Amino acid sequence: MSRPGEAFEPAVDVPRPGPVPPLRVGRPTRSLLANGLEAMVVARPSVPRVELRLTVPAGAAIGTSAAASELLRSGILLGTKKLNQEEVSESIQRLGGSLSVQQDHDRLHISSSALSEAEDELYRLIFAITTQPNFPPEELETERVKLIEGLRIARATPQFLAGEQLQELIYGSHPYGRPEPPESAIRKTTRGQLQALHRATFLPSSAQITVVGDVDPRRTVARLRRAFGTWAGPSRAAKVPRVRPQVVSEVTFIDRPGLVQTVIMTGASGPPVGHPDQIPLALASAVLGGSFSSRLMANLREDKGYTYSPHTISEAHLRDSLLGASMEVRTKVTAAAFVELTYELGRLASVEVGQEELEETRNYLAGVRVIFLQTQAGLASSLSQVRGHGLDQRYLEGYSDRLAAVTPAELRRVASRYLAPANLTTVMVGDAGEAAEALSRLVPVRVKTPRRAKGS
Image 1: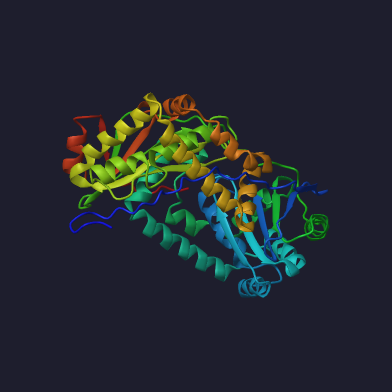
Image 2 (image 1 turned 90 degrees about the vertical axis):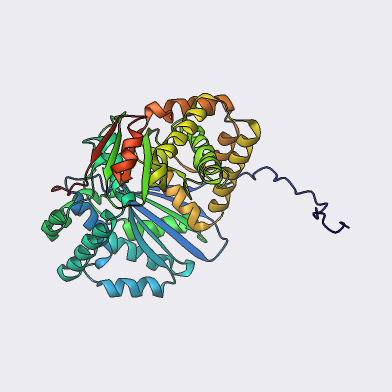
């Protein structure tokens, strides 16, 4: 018992976390349909549900029109030749499931689920949505207005401006650097353009289906054959050009007078998923700013109080990945925060991380991934993502082992190659006045005003 005035310290030893348990996906059942559609099925009977992921190469960087790509994503769920939008929604609810469409630079992802007893019906519904979209004019006009309003709101945020500018500087004329479409292009995009883009990109030979859940794999493959076997189209793959990234040494400062904070975003082109450097670099990125105990948090938030939530960024592309760091700081400490960010990047690239810090970070990364992959939805989404990069369940099963094999020297090597300050491009958005003047004493600065988006 402690005496009056003494601090009470419980005699309890906090247990140290044990090793991350191995992940076993099992052997998936694979099938190549006669039309070229690739199917992968994994039995995971934890709950009586089935998760489906269908991907096609209809990303925001595919095709000649960013506006058409964006409208295609929202237009897919507006109904089929036989079902209107409301009937599609009622159908998925009747199956006890969910339905959504996401899009990245390379692919369009249809994610759906249902009770396992409704498996057959789910596949027929997704087939109709995928191959027979109707793009009804009235509903399409509503989506057009929603897209325009959403982009107006986004363009008013400094985070959006910084991210869009960073991509343009790094990728230049490459489709990955394509800005969001202007209102004029969205208004001019016709129903016929969407139908043409759909015919050009929704091809069975370049699509992939992933199914995970309480299923019998052989029976599921037979059901997929019946549902999707009549999907027809030429054998043609969408091609994404090779990335030729650029590094801009000066800081690009977009002036937004009156803002009380500066958004600082720095980044570079990194390796794609599956590259030997990808997992070591993910660990280096996590050490820098991937958790609440990361270096950026300890320095810029806990010690200096410059920002609330500094963090690293990572966006996977088919050809590469965009990686770096982002934060919002008070205008008066913009230059000081940039100095500390540069210091942490340089330290990571030049000094080996201590073993204890390395172990804590790798256990965190491995643990989070294992937890996510325990769910049917998490496994289905992860398998679908890695399959797009030509990988399979072995990549997921070997992730923790590969993470455990990263040495301090290897981490420093990849950080030096990809995250060294000289290899990064930096964009800031805020009130340039005093902030840009102080920053210009440290690094060349180019001040810009926000521009209006040009035609797509």
